[in-house]
Length: 372
Ligand SMILES: Nc1ncnc2c1ncn2[C@@H]1O[C@H](COP(=O)(O)OP(=O)(O)OP(=O)(O)O)[C@@H](O)[C@H]1O
Image (cartoon, rainbow, N blue to C red; front, side, top):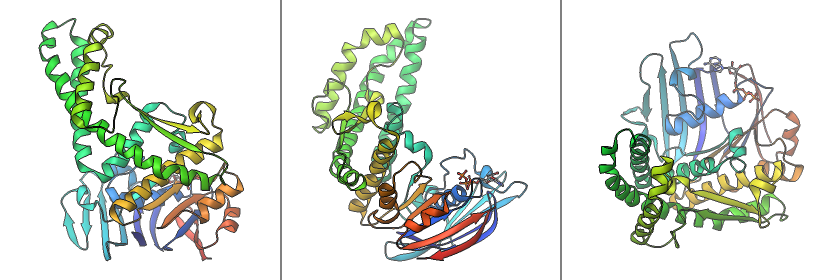
């Protein structure tokens, strides 16, 4: 998968820009607040009709303009696609693929897939378990639509059960439905654990090798999936997991009623990341946790490639700072396969680029571009 060309009109701070990209590495550089992230955001929007940092599409339209427009030429599945998105202030956005109007954003899936790494992802290792669950969920949803359905249903049940536990003392009749919610949460929870465990196993096959390359063989990355304590074998059958979840719910019933919180289920799962056998969260340096977080995303991309035969386009926003020279060189030159976009502020980083194209961004324009 690769993005050959991009055209933007009235998107964020770009009134009009056209760019032709390199099939491998594209380095987008410039001072702060010039439009580097905006460019990556436009590319990511073409893959999912969603922005990672805007809640509403109207934020993406240039201030005081009625419409914004994104157009990309993408090579994917041995064909060329022209993808277009028209963003309308006050109206829903419109999407096209090769001139045909798309009814839903879901129809974009598989044409242009992107894996985005943004500065917030640097905290993937250091933050609480919810950040790592989000990473797992996003990655598995990209590959398995059934997982997305199970997760949506589980979250819906979780919300309901949370309300029952919160209000049961004022309204005891709510407890009549608790067993039914527990049963259904165990059914969907078992599927979630099954998918997560298998995905973490795949990650565990890919990420350590990437991390070893990245760190010049100096560090060993280890991954462990932590789930509900009664689940002895998360890779086992969904039926066995289901029964273990029921047991856990039963043993926590009193505690849930007393604390009025939902304590049992995979909504408390974690992905434990270790470096040389020590918790990366507690002991990893800034550079090490960055490297580990990036290795996980790169592993996600490799798993996608193995499953579909296509490399997702990798969007790396501001990842080079705080990496030493060797680790920067890995990002610039040794990320396997597919197309990569990297933003940075320092023009010196260009010297480290062995093959690709660089774009200097200033005030929503491409001031200069150069191939190496
Ligand atoms: N809807 C919009 N209309 C016009 N300008 C916008 C809009 N949204 C954001 N901007 C402008 O875009 C600029 C920020 O661009 P962007 O986030 O791409 O910066 P950047 O080059 O990645 O900077 P940094 O290096 O600080 O991350 C800001 O000047 C902001 O005011």
